Image (tube, rainbow over all chains, first blue to last red; front, side, top):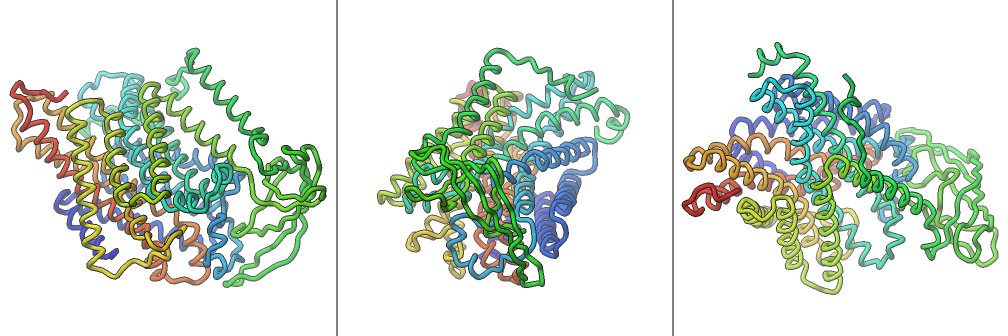
Length: 258
Length: 373
C-alpha cells in the first residue's frame, strides 16, 4: 500500500513537475531520512534538545538550499526560520512543560501498547514532545518564509529604488496574503488527524470539562497552534531579514540573482 | 537598524481594548474552577522522596519518586479545605506525571476524608493561552483578514462538531463526510477569495481533486492487502474504521488542496488581468511554472505536520527494541498513507486547477475580456 502510493506520487511529481518535481521528491526522501536519524540518535541516548536543534537546522539548510538554490533570498529564509525555531523552543517549551503533555495520554494508558512497552527508558518525554512540536512547525514555517523572501526579492528586482523600510512593508503585505491559506492547510491537516479522537470523545460521552482538560486534546491541538504561531512570527522576521540583506548587499545581489 | 524601528507599536484604542480583553479572559480562565462540577484542588506544598530504581530494556536506570502533596480545594461544598494527595512519578515521565506547586488538579474525594485521589491536571488555561496568543498575533499582524481567518476557523469547527453529532446519531459517515467537505471548501474559499470567478474555479478544482484522490485511494486500497486498522490511534468502533480513516485522510488533504487551487486560480486571474489577450498555451505554461514553485514546499508542510506527531511513540518503541520494519508497517503506516494521499492530492490539484481556471477564467468568459477580477 505504502509502496504503491509512493511510486504513484513519484510518477505524478515527475509528470507534473518535471525535473524539479523529481528534485522535490528526493528532497522529501532526504527529509524522511533526516527525521529517522534524529529519532535513532535520541533513542541511542543523545541529549534531545541539541539533537533536535542540529537536525532541524540541517533539514532547513538541505530543503531550502537544495530546492531553491544558494542565494540571498534563501540566506534570509534560512536565518529567519532558524530564529523562529529558537524562539519557539524558548517560549513554547515552558508552556508545554507546565501543561504536562508528555508521555501517554489518558487514552493511550488504557491501550495495549502501554502495557507491553517498558517505561523505564530514562529519557525526558517533555523534551521529546518539544522536539515533535518543533518538527511539526518546520514545514509550514519554511513555506511561509520562502514565499515571503522570494516575493520581496521579486519586488526589489522590479523596483530597486525601494528603501529597506518599504521592502519590509511589502513583505508584511505578502505575508498577509498567504497567511490564510497556510493556516487553513494546518487546520485541516489537524482536523483530519483529530477525527478519531473526536469520535472517541463522542462515543465515550465525555463532557466538555473532561475534553478541554484532557492530555490527548492538548497533545493534538498544541502542536497545531504552535505551528500557526510560528508562521505568524516568521512573517515579520523574514520580511525584515530579506529587506536588510537586499539593501545591505546591493552589489552582491545584482551580480548573483538578477 | 533594529527590528523595533519598523514595528512602531502604535496601538489604537481597539487594539488596547483587545489586549485588555485577552488578559481579562486569561485571568478568568485561571480561576474558573467554580464553573466545574468536579472537585478541583490547588497544590500548595510538594515533597518529593526517592522511591526506587528500575531497569529498562537497555540497562537504562529509571528513578521513581514519590510525591506527597498538600492541596487546598478551590470549589464545591468543601472549598477551602486542605487535603493530602499521593503521586508517583518517574524520571522520564512516560506513564506518569509530576505535579508542581501552584498547579490545579482534578481530585476525587469522599465526604469528610483528608485524603484524595488525583484524577488529572487542569489544562484549560494552557489551551486558552495558546489560542489567545494565536488570535492576538493574527489580529496584530493583520486586522481585517486576520479577523476573517479567525471567523472561518470558528465556523468550520462549529460545523465539524454539528456533523460529528449527526454521525453519532447514526447518519451515514461517507455521505456526511462529503457534505462536510463541500461545505468546508465553499466557506473557506469564499472567505479567502470573495464572490469572484476565481473562487468558483478554485471550489470546482478542489472538489474534483478530492474526488480524484478518493478514487485513487480506493483503487490502491483494493489492489493491496488491507491495512491493519486495529493499530490506529484512538480506535473506537471496529465496524467503520476504514471509513473513518478515509474521512480523516481526505479532510487532511483538503486544506493543502485548497491552498494549491486558490493560488493557481488567483495566479491565472492575475495574468488575465495583466494581459487579457493571452493565449491558452501561455496560460498553461504559467500554471506549470506556478506548480513547480508550490509543489515541493506544500508537500513538505504536510510531511512535517503528519509525521512529527509520531516522534514520541516511535522513540519509545525503538528503545523497546522494535525494528524499523515494524514501525513503518504498523506504527507509522497510517500517518504515511495519510501523508502520501495528501501529497498526491497536492500534485493532482495543479493540473486540475489549471484546467478549471483556464476553462472558467479564459475560455468561458464573456467576450468583454478580463471578466475575472
